[in-house]
Image 1: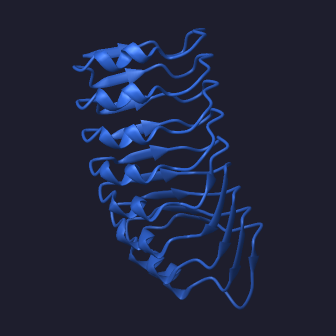
Image 2: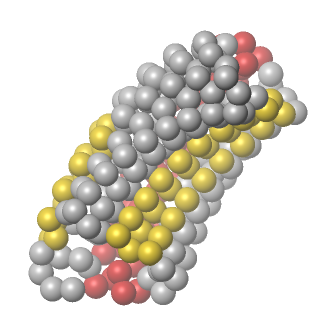
Length: 206
């Protein structure tokens, strides 16, 4: 069952009653003018695989109930006004291959539970207010092809475990507050075609 209302001029809130449509496996209401929160009732949609809410005016936090969507493959919430942290329950989404949260106002550290998303291919968290270090567990995401975390407030070093991401084609960590040397393990990324580390505090030799 599909709900496709994308790229219209819809306004108002997402009704909580959407959680009653338990047969939905596809929701696209991206590219509208929707405001308010993502309803907690979204957690009832256990069959949902594709969820597109990008380019709206949604606010509030990502509900922890998002972690109940065990069938989810694609979650795109970029281009909103979402605040708060990434809920640790995100680690329950073990089928997720595409997580796009860029261009919001999310904050806090990147939860270590992200490392539980073994099917993840794209992880985009750019243009938020994330802080803290890059978790070393990131090296467990061996299916990852795109890692885009630019324009945040990340500190510390790039963990050596980055070298485990042998499928990584795009690594963008520019405009953060990262420091230390660029790890030699970056040279192990044989699939890498784009590397952008500009606007940090790196030192040492290349």
